[in-house]
Length: 359
Image 1: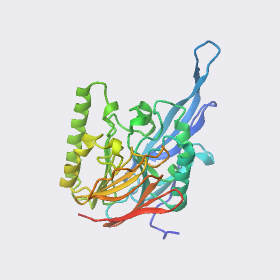
Image 2: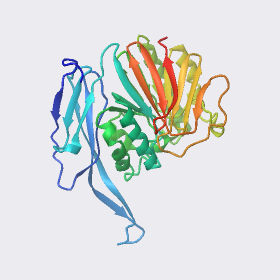
Image 3: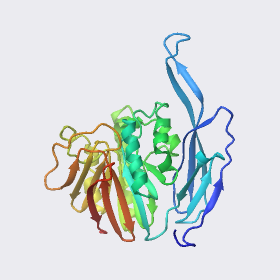
């Protein structure tokens, strides 16, 4: 039991005037969490829609989903809050606001949960059993098709117990298809790249899914140029942070031979990461575990959340610390000006460990 006075415990009752036909289809969970604000979200199913190739023979059915959300301001930093979104046990949860200054906290990173739902469930079960994160970084590909409404309740059902007690910060994956569901469910602006502070650490979440941004090459390049300009400006402003972390779906390097060279825009960011002293990057897209150390920066690929595994058949020479074709998740413990990373298989076996240095 933590000492009294460390946290201000409060209960937030959120009035949910759902119609008789509505039922909870996802959440509750918390996004956009900062020192003094947070948004509580829950997804309701307001009905179903069906279609088919013949009248009266409707083979395909999908739920009608709607995000309900309430934003709170004027909160206390580093404080645990409790909430109730429905007046029932399934609508309850808690979260902790971001602390100010050097602090001790834990966050978990994983991704590519889009398929093999039984494996996804094993990964989340292991996280619940072995960790107690303040927040989650998801490296993208939450579902197999972000536009398919039938897939989101499955994702939220598997993640329910984790997301009802840890803030959620997702990256946009290519399987989200840049669909409006992703923006609506996670209360993101039109540009799905953003940054936030947690304690004395700065986090940047990038949108690496260039192909789904627009139909024309010119529009895609304009989007990327604007994001790179924003990234450099954000990195400049965060130089006083003890650690700078970057998260995105597509990795800048890989041990998967057939994918090497696939993400040149991300690879081109590596000199900028070095210039502005990024501590580590967390990525997905490749369904395995990979860890590299290049010019002082750690690159972790944690895409083992459920999608079919890929071989790690051509590790880059000279910078590879660990590669393994296995399901996995990553745990980061920050203790003031120190940080320690551990990667695990769903059975609890440790894959890898590293201490991160404050540059």
